[in-house]
Length: 265
Image (cartoon, rainbow, N blue to C red; front, side, top):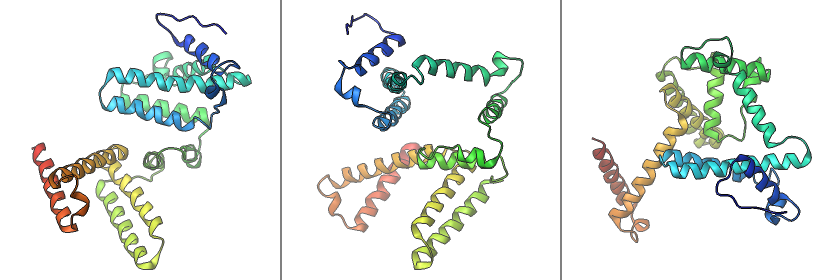
């Protein structure tokens, strides 16, 4: 199978290149792959694209979006080989979906605000998917989502049926209740691991009640944790950190936290 290099390539070139990689005389690795074998690759490439967004790095984002597009092309090619669908079918499907779910742009409906547009989208999506009940809507949230993201999505959808906090204080009370149940479980009066999960789920609800995205606030907490541990190592010396007493470690942590808070003033 011949291949002629070009100065600049487009989406159709990508499809042809992937098909050649998967062909009998192509790449052994590419030929062996299945949807399942590169499942994690898809997830990793998506997160790397998100990381490029977080870094505000347009050059890196362009590269990472290409890696995501490769995953789409690979999965599409696998199905094209079976005769089920092609990359063009994927493009056709998403175009039709966008037109259908934007009647205020491509039809006769109106949506003057973002809220109205989102409400229209959700209503049309539910109708399209046949989601008429709370069960339908909750069970359609993928279990493969990151746990915190899934918790937030479930809470949001259940909120349409009245399962929503009226104010943040109500959410905080739930967190306190779950904490008390965890304490009891740790004393032998229940399943501590299960109660810890309930506490995390309640904490996600509290973040949402405060108007924050649980995934983002936990990412921020992880960033602060990472920064403080690194600062503790700088203060103690790289060879000394692991050998500190609990009291010495707490003192360094307090200093690192104070420095962080002072830098925000």
